Image 1 (cartoon, rainbow, N blue to C red):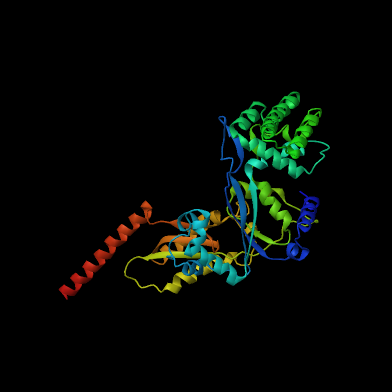
Image 2 (cartoon, rainbow, N blue to C red; image 1 turned 30 degrees about the vertical axis):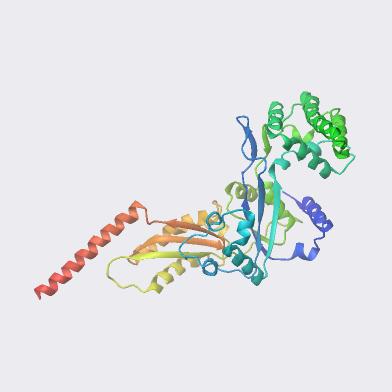
Length: 402
């Protein structure tokens, strides 16, 4: 799909906010992770699937001079074999996290490396209502100001809002119910205006919003809140990922694993200025833990050489054109699950047993496959232990007999 016009509009808005062309067009890599990813905002069994205060954040760091996962763990004083998780290493309130030694070390790395932090934030509850304002024709005020006021009104009593929206199957409001739906919103606004009047206060924006909703009752349709999925206030979050792609068409964006989003983005064939997404390199790092079987001495570089030879077939090739990734999305998890079978066989052929494999594409994200508690692995360990013991006994007996 051709998104050139949308991309240009986003570019104009970014420039209006003071972002210059040099940054927008700079060819660099942006790494992303997300928090508050509730997938979508829906009403189910009369309740929202998330807290009204939920905030979705999509962001990360720009890093040309990247470091390995091992370097990051070493800098933080962490065990190389343990996974780094913010839920474990950075617990606490915002202020408590700022005081943590590990957090200061991370900020120091970012400063020393000259990386910059980037992010976009979405107040999901707010985002569920913006289509109401966007559906009103001939607004007499800045729509962003109206959206903010409507958000304050509807968030004041979330349960009342949910009840009204459920009643009219928002955002699939039937044409014959447009007036009734807007009238109930106006009643909520009137309640706040009345409370303010008792305190000798008046919010002009709220009055303008009420008048705009009154006029909207005469519209034949509210285009953005009709014929949509009933009770789904915000659809899946692919739109937020897509916006990043359209904002920075010349940058390489590395997102965290999100299968639903990746599947849709891949199917869309995003085109900007007549070009599809460009091919770009990725650097993958695999760390394997091996248990030796038997008494036979095997040099470490024998394993390393055999594994390198296996991966040579993927070196400097477009991974999406190689089986099975020509029909499977080459995510960190999918690639690791596929490669681990081959690596396990390579290790076994050299009289070893694969204990654990850790894969990473960025310093802050890894995928671990651990066989230590796998029944097949434990059975193999038992068999080899018995075999080793038998070999030792036979050798001792041979020496005694001699």
